[in-house]
Image 1 (cartoon, rainbow, N blue to C red):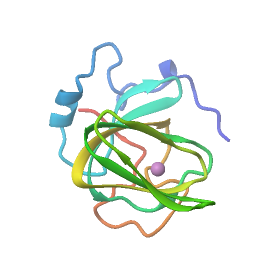
Image 2: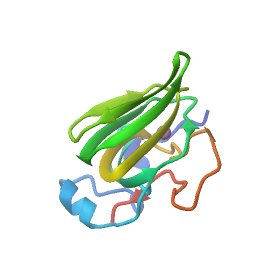
Image 3: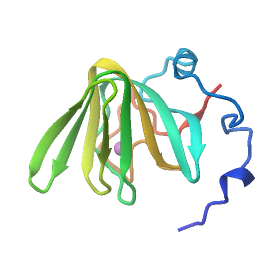
Image 4: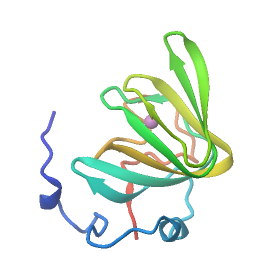
Length: 146
Ligand code: NI
């Protein structure tokens, strides 16, 4: 595995300004794309990504990292395929949940939601293994906040 440089040494052009507060409401107003996360902060070697979501993402698995979700607006469902079977967790606004590494999952939001996702910098939105990706899902490691 390639060792990442410390945050302070990374290029700044594609990083959010770390020296000013990020107002989530303003960040949400700055983009409209669904399932297309913006990087609103970086913490050590993790990114904090803000995404607007509606409808279904894809079933996918992160083989090497857990994935933390916090619901900022609306309601998020996360379907999970675990050894004991399939289940869905429902996260209301203000709720959080961590999908353990290696667990196949599919986020969805029938009525729309805004979420914060914490995961290591460079983590692909569709994981290491995934089903076919439809056009409405952005395959990305996160976009800069503009
Ligand atoms: Ni995921």
